[in-house]
Structure formats: C-alpha cells, structure tokens
Length: 287
Image (cartoon, rainbow, N blue to C red; front, side, top):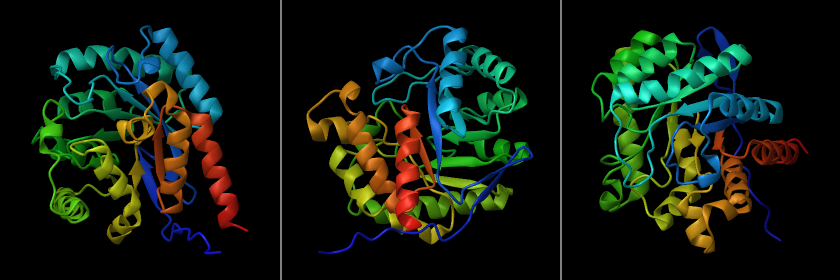
C-alpha cells in the first residue's frame, strides 16, 4: 500500500502583530466573523454586537488564534459598500470584541485602505485583503505605514464580476506569477510579514479551485505562510451536491488535505472541527 506523503512545515514563520508574536510552527485557525446581512453561508449571519461578542468568545474558547472581521460581502455578484458604511458595520464589533477579549488577535477583512487604517487604530493587528492592493492603490502603502502583517489573496477583477474571469491557461503558473509581483511590491514598500491566500472560489470554478488545492505545496517556493479559506464554499458544496449548511464535513476533509500540503492558517466558520483536524494531522506528523 502506498504511503501518504505529508508536506512538512519546513519553515517556522513568526508574525509580528503589533508587538504580539504569532508563531506558526503548528498551523492555526482563523475564525470568520461576517458583519454582513448577505453572507453566502446563511447561518453565519447575525445582527447585534452582543451576538458577535458571544460568537467571538465561543471561537476563542474552541481554539481560534485569529478572528477575522469583515463588513464587506465578497461573494460572487455582491455589491460594494462605500468606506463609511463598511466602517459603521465593523467598528462597533471590533470595539466590543476587544473590550470583552482584550488579548484576542483580530484581522480586518477589507480592500479599502481607510477601513484598514481605522480598524488597526481601533486595535486590529492584521490586514486581510482579497485584492492584494489591486482594488485600492493606497492599500499597500497604508499597510507598510501601519507595520502589520498583510494577507494577500489571489483574485482577478472584483467580486461583482470575478466569475466571468475564471479563464486560465495554467492556473498554478498564473497564481504564482501574481504572487511574485505582489510580494515584490510589498517588499519595496517595507511590508515584512506577508501571508499568501490562493483565493479559492475567487475568479475560479470549483474544478479550478480543487486543481489549485491539489498543487498547494507549490506555493512553498516563496517561503511565506499560506492561508487556506475553503470553508463551506462552492468547491465543496457543489462538488457534493449539497448546500453550504451541509458542507461542514467536506470542509474538514479539504482542510485536512491542505494541512498535509503545508497550510499554516485555516480560515473557517467552524473552529472546533478545524482545530481537531490540526491536532490529528500534527499527531500523525509526530509519530
């Protein structure tokens, strides 16, 4: 019987999150907190600051190391918010969570530089940008000035029409070329901690996303941490013929494959299951 090959995490990555060091020698979980009324996963939609604090507490208790706060829906066909509306959504939630859990590590999921700036001023320690600066030319200079880790995701176009651009001659090569340019731009500006997100489901069909996951270990050529965000996405639920609400088991399966291929951060709706996957894969690595 052929053995299963596990891609080891050869590099120990450490992120400087406003003076708090996050070491990724063992993969960590990022819990998704959507401050949106139209998230593709209906069960993730909540309305009050109190509920967000309760959700944050549950995720932290289950083992999340990062909480990702987002006020802008980025599902295919979504409508853009202006900066003020996005700030009005996320700022009360950020403030409430940090008041209740002052030691928690938050990231802001935004492609507006001004939202990132306000969020970091409020206590957020990581910027998570689906556009890698392509939707706001001031994003990279702002992140450099703020001095926080930056999550750069691969996407073509913008969420309103990105699925019309899911056309690739070689999706792995195009994604690697994209990150080569993004990393160079970040380095020129002095951004040190760069996390790479292949952007599963963004300007990609389910089949293309699965093909990219199959080759995930190729992104280790950059020497940067890799974030994987597949939680309950169409690459899972469409492949299984189910709805997002029934895609937890499929999410865990693909997260486990990503861990075998060296993923450092799992971005998920369901923290406990992702933490358990990390513990078991790590146990196999250490036997």
